[in-house]
Length: 301
Ligand code: NAD
Image (cartoon, rainbow, N blue to C red):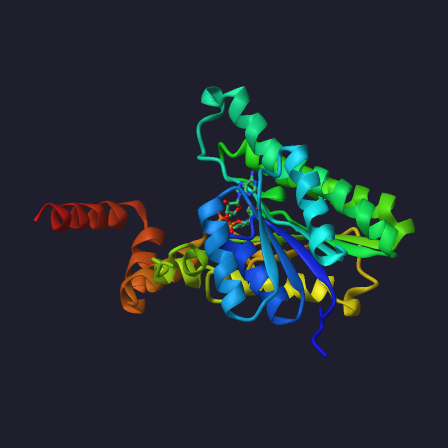
């Protein structure tokens, strides 16, 4: 007996990327899968791929930020398969990192609409069905950017921070209907192989080795946790957030000599060069000036 046999899972943004890996994971474990996505071409292609693997599923076109599209998707799922047991609010859009003073209200509103209002609407409509069936699970795909930031990412970080708050708020409201609500916050996940058409990842050694786990994440890493959280084995877990990031958010990032030396070894593979540079950087100012002169003339030649 497969883990999700007789269960129906809706995955928003399930046509490509992390959502596609989640849809395949549920399908491979026996669930009937509803792929909801704004990109009709990718949605149809994803459905073909799922069907070719023997997964029973449908594709529903729509925008998570439009309530009519959301209610139509939940209605179609019930009409087609008779139930909804699992909802994964995965559809999301990024933000280009435009400086704060140049950001437009429309840009803020679109990111908040897709990344936060969408999960709110989908949860409301799907939970109504789940409540009538005696329970269910909602999993919100947030981001480590809900917890830490680079400059100029306000709309995205705020949308994902809001999603964590929405998660515990929904968990409290829906507990009486035996609906669990959990958030998963991925770190850096390379989705190349789950795009349509699939691409080869273009990652460097430094990209991988800066993670405590020694590599950038894959959509399958997220799908594995989502499947566990949706299963009965996770029946005591609700309202909380799980960070899956290869250790990036717990890593101290003070730039001391050892970190610089490690980065040089990673970049050049040359530990002798790293040691020389460390000695030069920590030497007295006369020696440092001399090293700078030599480096300057080396770079010119
Ligand atoms: P992706 O761009 O590869 O895929 C997103 C999918 O969502 C696409 O199929 C797209 O068409 C669909 N989509 C976008 N807007 C939509 C809308 N309004 N309505 C319906 N469908 C819509 O993205 P991804 O990298 O796989 O990210 C998936 C989720 O994971 C997002 O919520 C993202 O914020 C989050 N996340 C990703 C990473 C990462 O490194 N990839 C890290 C942290 C969090």
